[in-house]
Image (cartoon, rainbow, N blue to C red; front, side, top):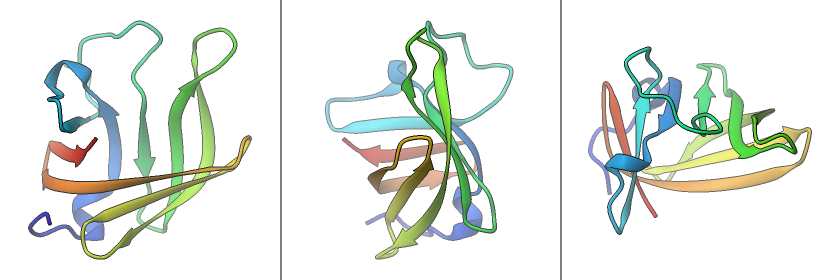
Amino acid sequence: MADQVTPESVHGHWVHVPAEDTATERVYRRASPQLLPQRGGHTGFELEPDGRAVLRMRPGADDRLQAGEGTWQLANDDTLVLTQHAPNPASNVLQILSVQPDRMVVAK
C-alpha cells in the first residue's frame, strides 16, 4: 500500500511516461512542457478536486488520443478508480504504489 495517498495528492493532470516504467510498475508524471513528445501523444488523465475526470486513455481512429469525460475516486486508501462516462463507457482501476508531488507509480 502507498503511504499518504489522499485526494489532494492525486489532483491534477498526469501523463504516462513509458521510459520510466519497470516490469511491475507504470510511472505517471505531472503534465509539463519538459516532458518529451511521444508519438500519438501521452496517455493519462486529469483529476479535478470535485471528482470529475478527463481521461486520455485510448488512441482514436487517427492515432490522436481521444479525451473522455468521467469521474474518479480513491478506494481502500491506495486504489484509484477511473470511470469514463462518454464517449465510450469504461473503467480502469490503478493500485497506487507511491505518489509524490511530481510522480505517481502504479502497479501494472
